[in-house]
Image (tube, rainbow, N blue to C red; front, side, top):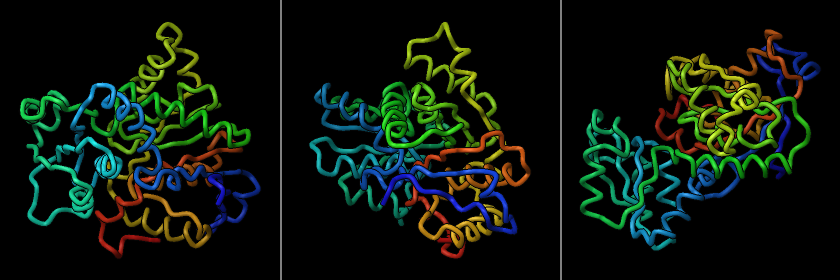
Amino acid sequence: MSLIQSINLNFLGASTLNQTYQLDIYRGDLEHAKAPGNKWHKLRYHLKAAEQQNAKYIGSLGGPYSNHLHALAASLADRDEQAILLVRGELQTGLTPTLQDAVADGAELWPSQRSDFRLGLEANVVKHISQLYPEIYWVPEGGGGVLGAEGCADWANTIGATSGQYSAWAIAAGTGTTAAGILSSEACPKLEVFSALKGMAQQRAKIISLAANIVKQQDDLQHISDRLGFHDDAHLGGYAKLPLELTMFLKAFFEANPDVELDPVYTSKVLFSLWHKMKAGSWPHTKTLMIHTGGMQGWRGYASHQTPF
């Protein structure tokens, strides 16, 4: 199957969108079985750095359904390093399917109070773990930082080499690491970023700064800024919220596109926003490439009746 597929936009009563717009999707979810989508690309250089430091453990942070933690544990299953996963909140007796997979892959789990978790790599529990395991390498939450973004810059170059000409690429943002990496690559013509978090208008500046850091152009932010479109109104109520309107939309989408499944947190909300902008005639690009960043295992955090695929 090709990693680039065309999307049928004519559903939910819209019968002429295919004549006005072309929307293709890059199936990042089909890459790297253990760390699909952007996950492997964000981890790649971190794993290399850990190896160079002769780390015996690789630690990171995330929620109980974290795609990042799931990917990290799976990626280390066949390596010498052990995953140390700091999980937001208390660990329950019945672990989530995500954490069950991580334990099966050899990961060690640590709980974290939410207030401490918000401190990231400065959290007290991180310091405690580092004392117990001095040979640990820490990956920022979500695979963030410069190394995570550099891996996504490489990914953008690969996407650009395998895709045609588009007016813009579209992608979701959590930490903004993937968006920054892709924006730093000249392979991307213009990047439209849809934040999955509520109240993140300031994220645009952070993405630009990180992208500039990668290409060493802190003095030329305007060129990077001009290539970035940012949307902070696509979260549909907040991070990981799955309102009925999105579920119904995804069911209609799947009927029209039975070969494409989307995750509930990121790419589904990109499509929801894109499609409605296209239907309203306000989307400025006639030919768009939407990047699927994976995260399909995240559906296990929702009730079965909410899953449209």
